[in-house]
Length: 494
Picture 1 (tube, rainbow, N blue to C red):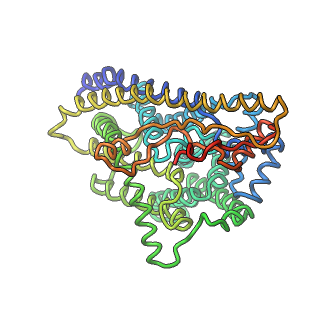
Picture 2 (picture 1 turned 90 degrees about the vertical axis):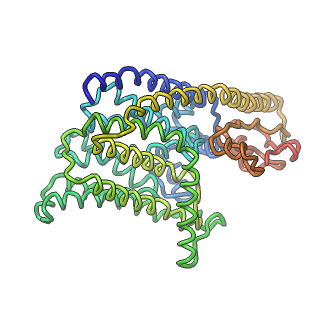
């Protein structure tokens, strides 16, 4: 494609991509503004109001989980919330961190692409990653926002590991990221270690399978050092008494036979792609975009020596093993799919894999018979998603606002009762549920499926017809003299 055609891609289409990204940004800001603390958010706010960060991390380590880095991060977040008396900027801050890390990696890979176009591409990828995540509500769950950063952190770490030399601050960042990946999420760390192992094998091959030369390679030494730090941190996480206290609950049930494990893997992988299937229309736009990028641009300072078939086979094999490693913890703990938020990084790298295949297709295929339709299809798809995001903003802003008002009105009413010296148990109305829609819900509604629970914008927690832990946490956070319960069980949302 000639230079003039590239300018068309960078100018005309960029306006549509930028418009869509702005719609995403406004939508996410709106959701963050109307978000309210969820169950564990209230729990941790209470804990951090009475404890130091060190005491809080110790308490969690011995009673709940060994993820000392994640709890330290939560400690900083909730201490900041208590100090500023504000929390709604955190989801957007984490969104910016995720975009920033992806941009930092992408700009080193594609220097031939204009900064404006590349930033738009990164924003579009990350915005769709957030929107199509299996557990969308995690985006505004204060104590779990870091799930969205696992994949970008791994990318930044790989970038640093594969640099021949690092500046002092990059060494410090690499050390920090190694600790985060090792002590933040025990189900993700083994996956990271496997990726580092493959990265090391690449340099072993690049050094003609010479162990001595491989060991002299500065990049190999960095990989080994980072892996060592991660393993030490992982061991600290694994030996935590809190892990075993929690594992004794009835929530966990492991397979008891080889056939049980096979069933578990089948269920987990099948369920993951079942959810992903409904977001294919969104991913279609990325496929077209990356085919175009592959046809027009190259990866900086890297000559592709393998054939198209070899690259597809190797990348598919790596992705297959990534999926297997990712679902293994869920199969072991729940004999199947497990908790949806654990698949956040899997969604990211599934999208990454899809974009890679599209890029390679565009890069190697000199002639595409339907090339002339790509630009038109891409622009039409952009316009359709712009319309969808406009509708999402309109409908979800109403739903989110009603939810936020119901929470705020309840808190204000309870504060007034507290001032009057009310004690005992106070009856309250249920919180307004912030319903939304997604492709799966709309599809099943279209075909008339009866069992079709409607998705929500936020995680919802509330008291019950008798005071529960949520009521206790609410009492501790606001220093109420009473607990709360729901007025009528018939008003509870099933």
